Length: 493
Image 1: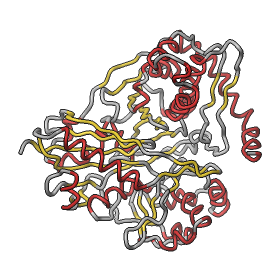
Image 2: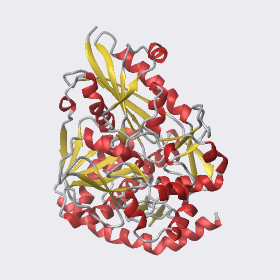
Image 3: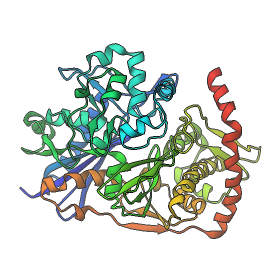
Image 4: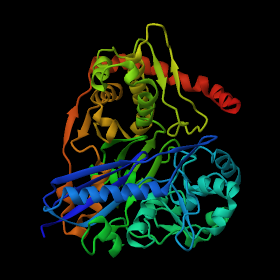
């Protein structure tokens, strides 16, 4: 029958990534499946839960086929984003074919109402943590839904995050973890907050029972296991949110910095238990005696994807490799061209849903490679603004980095040069998958330490860092000067 194998499924903004390992920690296979996001107008971004499910079926079948004869998958770990909230009725039917995602900006009005309705500090006391004012958190998300689609919440029996919905499809059981509901439950204790649920007009029972992320939520349903090519009694974890799973997959320790990149970046550090209260960043418990203090961008990898989709392609000629070679020949600062990466509003440290992207300093001398480098530099400059807040707790010695954007090698050097610290790049960029697999490993009888990844180091160049600091001084002045302009443009649009 072969060895017991462990699989990790990580649901990202644009695709599902999956991997499978044996008991020695050898990665035997990987798979990925993209799914669409839909423009709902007025800043709305939606996805179809059925697309997530079809992606799940496809990647599991590929993993099973790729590992045939090398073992049987014994446990599956799950990871997914916070903010893609699914409403399900008592019969298990979706109440919305397309659900608003964490990128959806339509709850901005609900967020403003919350700031009027709750006394300063009241939510922090109830939630047990401080959350900056983002439209992606559950309360504004659900408050907006209550106003725009009250009939949906009236029929809702279960609220589910992406991984919870997939976990239910796999096992038939509704459970979740407290950390994935930060912003709706008292996070340190995982309990519901009566005052918050009353504000939303919801019964506390709509949030599934909470349990630790590595605990089994059940086994894959027998008929489904047969369809997927799995053996009997394959355990599925409760699962964890994408940030925590990626930090676990990267085996991050106290004091270490991290840049976990995707459509957005989670840029932060692991600290001791003492809470940090700077309102521009988010903190949340991780493991006992450890917390994560971090800022989340709105469009980092998303900015590069936007450039690729709209401004580079066959019409420009040549391969992507050649384009990147051209980028590396451009001097720091891209001939005085700066890019604000606020294509989806902005989260940390600005927290402005009306912020917009911009190129500043365009001339006739600028060519596509200058624009592309400016996009990469603009994202790194924005991370530099988060770094300045993080370093209130002392300078970062290095940053451990992973995620799809780290495959763009020139960008790694740009990040290291702008931030002025070494970037340790994971030898497996999909640490979210790895973390999900580590959650499931003990259920498969595998030592989770076998799944630890290695690193290579990209050192910053001191001269380039000094030059970038001059450009960063200009970058810092742009958003404050344009904030009112962005808001006015949004109103006009």
